[in-house]
Amino acid sequence: MVATDNLQMNSGQAPFNLSAYLQEQQTIVEAALDRAIPVIYPEKIYEAMRYSLLAGGKRLRPILCLATCQMAGGNTETSLPTACALEMIHTMSLIHDDLPAMDNDDYRRGKLTNHKVYGDDIAILAGDGLLAYAFEFVAANTKNVPAERVLQVIARLGKAVGAAGLVGGQVVDLESEAKTDVSIETLNFIHNHKTAALLEACVVCGGILAGTSAEDLQRLSRYAQNIGLAFQIIDDILDITATQEELGKTAGKDLQAQKVTYPSLWGIEESKNQAQQLISSAISQLEPFGDKATPLIAIAHYITSRTH
Amino acid sequence: MVATDNLQMNSGQAPFNLSAYLQEQQTIVEAALDRAIPVIYPEKIYEAMRYSLLAGGKRLRPILCLATCQMAGGNTETSLPTACALEMIHTMSLIHDDLPAMDNDDYRRGKLTNHKVYGDDIAILAGDGLLAYAFEFVAANTKNVPAERVLQVIARLGKAVGAAGLVGGQVVDLESEAKTDVSIETLNFIHNHKTAALLEACVVCGGILAGTSAEDLQRLSRYAQNIGLAFQIIDDILDITATQEELGKTAGKDLQAQKVTYPSLWGIEESKNQAQQLISSAISQLEPFGDKATPLIAIAHYITSRTH
Image 1 (tube, rainbow over the protein chains, first blue to last red):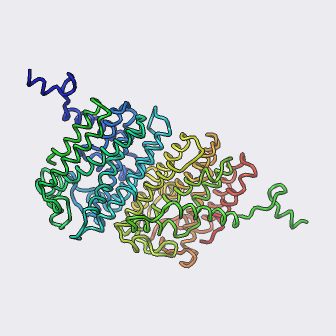
Image 2 (image 1 turned 180 degrees about the vertical axis):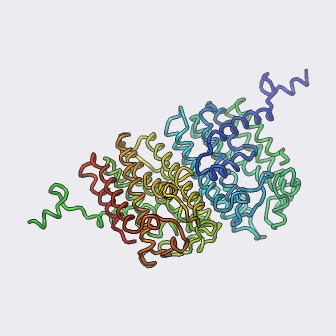
Image 3 (image 1 turned 60 degrees about the vertical axis):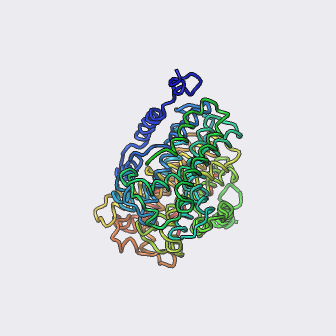
């Protein structure tokens, strides 16, 4: 009886199986992304867009959007176009970041990067195409939601990827490269913008589509910022401790580039502590949602326990 | 008296002064663009975005949007955010097209191109930032219009710039480079997508914001496609006949690159005839709008008569 009680976390319901949940949501997202971009003339650009969009990955961003919408009383149909758009935006940022003019990466998720397969010109255009299509996709395909909410989602997406988000974070990251005196404030700025801003958009847009109150959107926003920063701290730790095979990309790149990271500032143990505290703080924000928050709580825990 | 009659085109109203009209609208657009992007931290990216966005130019795209909205019963306040977004999108496409990985241009509008001033990395990000901001700007700033219409505008903008528009046209253009056997169909595809698609979005979005009927949107769409193609034919002619000083960019580039153009297929005289026919056909689409179409008619004529 004691053993059974331990497994039953949700007031007598079946225990939550995160791995099965993630697998199920990932399948929904993969299928929707595959349907979203058919290959027509000129084939090369659609193939290039699909090459990176369908290259696997955990689909954490779209799943966060779907999970939040569901938690807040919405459904998958409502949030799926936005979930797909978030993955298109994320993929665009990876394609452009990998370019020789930027981070100059040859591998991503264990596959050649977009420009190594299609050339720099097509890779730039594939990123542009994915970014533009993300907004079109949300505007044209979101059903059964008041149009005002969809506009709010689009404004959030734009902000998360533009100079006030991802792009701004990448600029400061490029400026900080090879500098060994990067402050913790600058490092936080980089990751709050390069990583957390888009994760925040995932969660907050899921909430907006479900009609969440302004107060609860604030809570969702804090949840996302905290897991975003924790996610980045764990990424920095994995860059040191994981193997290339586990990561699917070049390992030890930060050390080699003498890049300032959380472990280089705090050490590995303290970095793990900080990540753990951020996760606890993130989970506390979900209190008003009760049992419905189970998937988002499990995802938060998963972020600190992942090994790749 | 006869001389005065000749000047009075609009049933007894004062004659239409296109040059003054364009100047007035341009001033409105320049001021709105300037206000749209303040410089904050990290300054470099906002400066790079502003460098190209505020580098002058005729502002033909935003003016087409404003003029169409006004013609269809809307007003400047309604269409100004979309007009600005169209110029942001156009500017993004210029910044990315000029990159070494693409057309490798050092000058644009008589000034150094974005990457020559800020570097390839920042130029890529400035384009991304402008593209994302365009959608955010429309979603967040369009007032006094039903949200459904704003979503239609966003979907049109996305389509016009993505793989089904600008990006697709640029891909076929890159594939056709250095080929001397490019067909007229391929050349039309390139320009219908690289140039006409965005001009069509300018005009159609102006109409959507004003609440134009589906039938009239079709007419606006044909007007724009025709002036778009005429615009490109004239561009090709000017590349041969105008001086570098007049163009503000490298002249004779197409010839040097042995690029297939309308004049290279048809000769200069026949190209001029074709452009003229497209303009006449464009103007005939505006019949239902009566006198209110005067600015759009004048703009169509202006396209064939411009010298730079």
